[in-house]
Length: 361
Length: 131
Image (cartoon, rainbow over all chains, first blue to last red; front, side, top):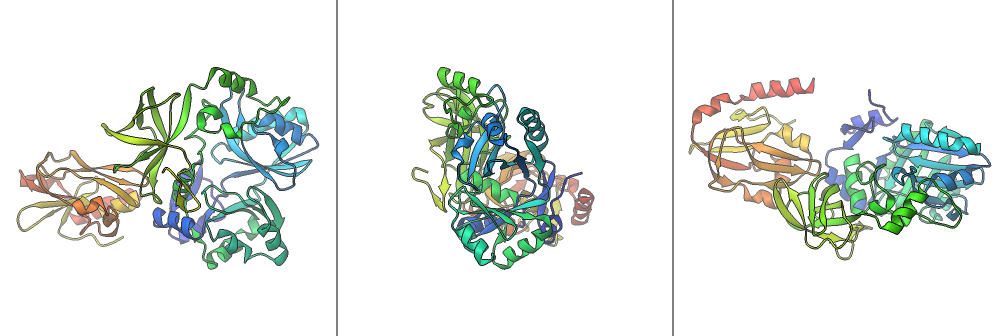
């Protein structure tokens, strides 16, 4: 039996096509995935992301604990509300999950981890936390709505009290504040500006309806996937997992090898850094007609790789993908699509940012 | 869901076939199938002159979500393809039983039409898939 969010009946009443996602019954689209994608790129859309797991970590040992738990450095977090994207690694340097860490106070951090990895994440975190006297509480009383797009912030600010609106408007990117009983973060998974908002479950339906009345278009997981891939953002389980290090997943920028910090997986990462990672993640664009998809074989001068996330990009009107291929100059790259080898271009991603194709795409 | 036109025959794999006055058989995918696939973004057409076998894959429709083979309802020679789908694959979403046709076949054995489902039987199949 799938788990449902507080918005389940709302999605169904809007005519959503529902799918199972990580054990949750979630909206894939409300009619047209492509129209929802464009609504986010051009105006404002909202996603029910309440399936994601919000966990509060409290205790005097919470910062030392996070120094050890994650590969990015929480010592970058000095101002309350500031957020950090990072991976949580196993001892071999493989990615257990990717997550966002919010710093709220010295004895209070909040993290958001994926839905499909909830159970293993909580078990891992609990086991690691034991030595640090950190209390862990999952916040199932909070639901999460991501409001994204060039008009997203204005639409949300108009619904807030003057004080909350002022605080939310002043947020820099990757920072959060509290106001009107909401936790408002200027973060997202679409490559557009906007907020991810945590709402007490009791106030959730009212808030969703006010957003709808303000002209924010509901968008499903289908559009969320095409938007995040255009934006060059990884999806856990597809682009990386426990057999892949951040260096092999295009996530070197999230690893902080700061002096004297012994995070789990560090030794393995340093060894790989010295020896050189055997695989690299690249962006691909198919200029021919066709669609790049997960699992297709990628042929390069240095050997075979495979498509990780692949899709049709509604913004570009052609297929894009992430692929993991052997390290080195790949030369002329081809992808095997149903037995036909089609040439693709290796590009630096993101593919799309703030509504536009990036240079070189 | 839109009405299923009475002059069509269907495969269980959701292709439709329409016998035209000149004896050609026009082929597409059902409105139900396009709904399952979602927004179509690419159609791989057969070539005019290709010989196709009933039940064999001879075209591919791709949505944002997935690629799906299109099977030939009857054997014969492909005599027309809907080249307009190259630029506007979404035509299948908009008009699956009309402008969204995919190819037309000159059948080599019209008896194969007897193996296809009539509209009522296809509607029953859809009902049973939903329960």
